[in-house]
Image 1 (cartoon, helix red, strand yellow):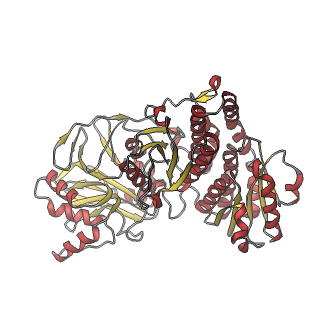
Image 2: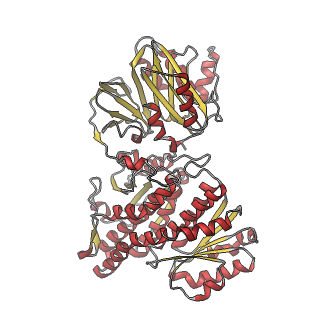
Image 3: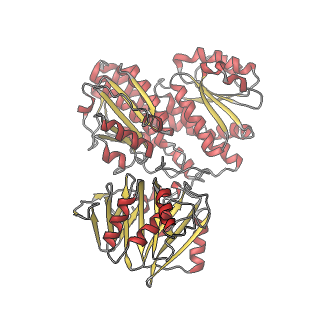
Length: 594
C-alpha cells in the first residue's frame, strides 16, 4: 500500500526512496538509491511486512543521494523511524548540542536530528515527547514517524508545509500530497502549523503545540483513476500536452457570459468584491507560473488599464516591499505548495494586502491561506515539467482580465469579441497538436545542438521564457529566452552556426519589428526555426530555415497556441536525445523547500 502511494508521488522526487515501519515491537526498513522500482524490487525480495509503515521518495536537499541519506531515518537504538519533507533550519545547532552529549550521527541529513530528538525525549508518553520535539524545531517541515512501542500508530506533525491525513474505512493514511491516497480515502484533514496528529486505523487524534486536543472537520476529495494512467501515451508529459484542449475547456466551463460579454467565477472561494476599487495588481509566482504571471500582468495593464507587475516570489519575499492601498495580490502556483510563493504571500498578508490565489489543487496551502481562490481545473499533472497547467493559467488570467476590464471601461462588444476568440481556442490547440509529426521532424533535425535561443516580443517574450524552460527541463539543453529587441544588447555575440534560434512570431502588433531582429540573427548564420501564424506575408519564408505554422488567434491568446508548439518541440528533442522526460534529473514537481 505504501509503495503504491509512493508511485503516485514519485514525480515530487526520485533520487532515492525508502520504506520503514513496525513489526513485532521492532523497526524494520529498506532503502535504495535511484527510482522507486529499485526499492520495490528489494522490498519484494526481502518479503518485508509491517503493521504500520511510512515511506518516502526523495529529492536531495541535505546530503547527496545515497542509501544512508535516504529516508526513513532512525535513532541509534532503532526505536523511531522518521520521514520528512522540508528543511529543519536549526538542525546544525541541534546536531552539535547532541554530539556534545555523546550522540553519533551517520548521515548528512537534517532529518536524522529529528529521530534522535524524538527517541531521546520519549519517556513513555508519546504525545509529550512529540510536543517537546516540535518545540525545538525551526523551519518549514512535514514529518511522519513510527515508534516501536506503538505499532498501530503513525505520528504526524507539520509547520508551514503540507501534510494531509486521509480517513478511509477502518484505515488511515498520511501524506504530503493527497494524490497518494485519493483512491482509498475520500475524507481528508489538513494539518495546520505546529499541530500534531496520532493516526490509527480507526481513530485520529489531533493536538495543538500545547497538547490541547482539537476537533477538526474533514474535507472531501475527488479524482479520477484515468488521471494517473498514461492512457496509451508513451509519457505522462505527452498525454498532458494532448489533454490541453480539454483542460482549456474545463478552465472556461460555466464561466463565460456571452450575452453580457463578461465572465463569472462560481468558485466557492471567490468573491468579485475583491476586484472592486483596486488600483494596482501584483503577481507573485515562480518558474512556469511566473511566465503565466508576466502574460497576465501585460493583459490586465493593457486591457483594464491598471498598473500591473509580476514578481519572482523567491526574490520578492526579501525586498521589504511597499504594498500601496488598493493593491490586489494574485499568487499563482500549480501545486499550491510552492515554498517561496507561500512565504511571499505571508509577507504581503502581514502588510495588510488581500490575496487572490490561482491554483490547481483544492485544499492546498495556498488555497487555504489566501483570501480568495480561482481553481484552474486542469486535473493532476504527473509529468514534472508543467504543460497543461500553464495553458490553463493563461486561460484563467484571460478570463480574469475580461472580468476586471468589463467592471471598468471595456464595452460589451469588445468583451464578446474576446470571449469568441476564447471559445475557438480548444479547437485551435487541437490543430496545433495535429502538427506533431511535422514538429517531430524539426526536432529530429535540431536535437544535436546544445545551445538554443528563444526570442519574441510583447506577449511572445514571456512565451519565449516558457519555451526555453521546457527545453531546459526535459532535454538538458542550455536554452535562453530573450526579448527579441534585446539580442543586439549583448546576447547576439553568442550566435553562431551551432546555436539555433526559435523565433516566436505570433504577436501581430510587433511582427514587422521582429522580422528585423530575425534578419540580424540570420546574418550571424544561426539556424532559425520560426513558429508563426498562418496567413503572414512571405518575408518570413525567405528568412527562416524551418516554419511551424499555427492557426490565427488574437495576440493575447497566441501564447497558448505557441506554447503548445514549443512543448511538442521540447518533448520530441528530449525523446531524440534519450532524456528521462517525465522525471528529469534534479527536478521535483512541487518545490516545497526554499
